[in-house]
Image: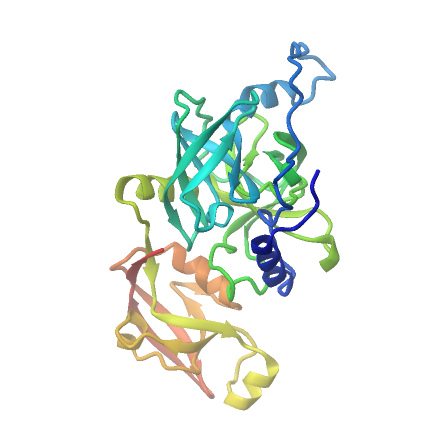
Length: 344
């Protein structure tokens, strides 16, 4: 397999590595991607040693490989002629190639993308694709999990683990992308190329779309993350219906509250989300929030980090009025915000 990293891939991986995050679409060049074995075999009957083979046999046709330029990622069938994947898999490409579990390939057209949740929908030339069941409720920590995708171009590879945690945020991720918050954590191995692939429960239901992993170089072992299926289906439906997705909006840019900043601002708190800038026409400005304020509670949720605030914001609706607590120097203040909206 060609191990040359494409220029676009190198730029993505370099930026991500600075925050010890690896988006799983940071793949090697795809001029010679690994291909599935063309030999057809009869599935073994289920039995004590069958493991999850029957589930994999049933769901694998619903998981595809997405080739966008020189980069490879994964995707999952959403409708008989639509695949959902990550926005960072397709990038700026509008025409991609879809490779299927049976070895066939067809063109695909990117219909719409959403950078906020890092999701994209692709229309496939091939029709009548098998649609898996998407699970709307969250799995429980400790449940078994299977990941299917194309790590490093090895199409329809399967790894197994458990659901390790819920509502996860990757530390330091909010400065790069708001998609890396409120995620499902799993120890099923996720590698470059798994992005956009399926995270399944043992019934074969899609519980999430694989999104990112923290690499071993950062000291991590099997720390992978997926976008919950409920988020995926909601955003994908909006993209297919309207071409865009609407998200709650505060109109502020946020940063991490470090000890140095805390000292310089004279802020009497060691946690919260620091307000770095304000959209003067946005909801935060109308509520009286200022640059340098530190938000410590939002909509009844304690806020210890930027990721906490972004996760809490996702559970609000445009037009909703929510209370917030902020620290301004040595004073605690309460404000009420009317949530705005934006498209990604």
